[in-house]
Image (cartoon, rainbow, N blue to C red; front, side):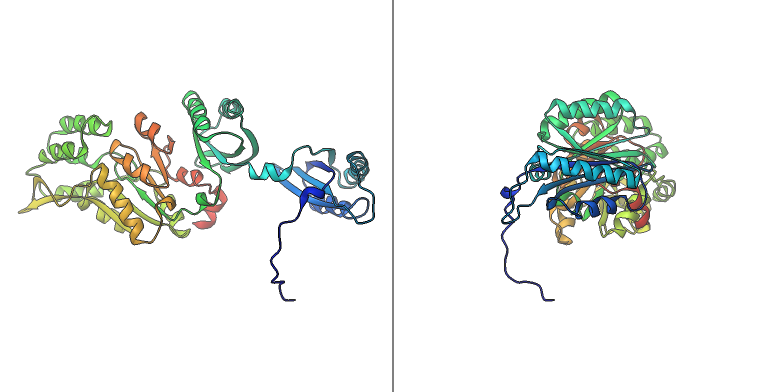
Length: 417
């Protein structure tokens, strides 16, 4: 049958005169949902289904259905009392037949307004997630006028994570209250606006040192030059935002003068990826993401790393080498704080991806411009002031926890890999 090409206006819901909520709970088994809807269609006032929510938790079913009376030409209007009486009889029959509990009550809230008012996802991540963290988050949400409309588990490994759908709360107030809960309980709590933009992300850039890999490459090189303590102090000052990154980089590179170029190979061979790094990259690649790295480190390290991981792009600084030895200088443009943001924008433009569909992950002050340029900036085990300025923060030791912040469940990850 051909589709009707005639444009149709939205249905007029003003004629719905009475609504009710049926809540089914009990042991889950095949046919419970079918039994309820068959009963609703089997006689009595004509109704339409306005809203449905169903969840099964460890074999226990909770099903909520909001129905409204449909007016029938020539028939008298059915009031709320008559609807509730009919549904009460129906609920008794369904409960006896299906072995569940069915409660009926008036639906005083317009389901259309509820569906339209779910502006944020709140993601709790931890190992473990404690009752104190969940309770604290719930109190914080209520304190700013928010309501928890739904909760689902995203993952149970390597971290446990839950996604709360929250309506009625302003973003700034919500983030402020939940940040205090996160600090008090040691649980990561991320806040994201509900909408297609969350699942429209198509490109991710990762910082390298202390994000994609453990430790700082420059510190490893300095150790081989016998200047580890000196360089570590400069690195710490730069990552904490106490020292201009470009200046600090030149100072640290200068102490490497005279090192044989083979040292770079030694350091690269001893790199240790952050747990979950391969899973994150492999999963996002399977999901169609462009993946790359933007580093304040060195191309002699990052380019082979990008190749081994099958990444789409890489940007970093280049150490100057003359006669097989490091000169203590750099070649070309320095990839500093501003340079990282420019690299992100360049990669996104090259692949035709809007910046609001990009994700950036980093830990240091030199990552802040990149984190704030991306559609979603994630501070990963970052310094406190970086966490405060990023869109959201993760303090888990597993890089693939980023997938839960993006809204992917553990099952979706397993399907992708």
